[in-house]
Image (cartoon, rainbow, N blue to C red; front, side, top):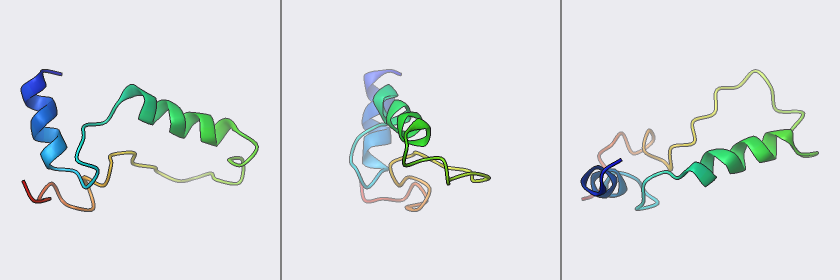
Length: 59
């Protein structure tokens, strides 16, 4: 993504940053670990809280 898009995304999440490849990798790693097998049938949204804040987090 461009730096402009990344900056806009950062303003819209409670974590104040855009998502990174490592964020998705950490979720997959957890689900494949010994701690993850009991989680199934779920839709996980690793979006840094963007959906909860409805994209309206203070800018």
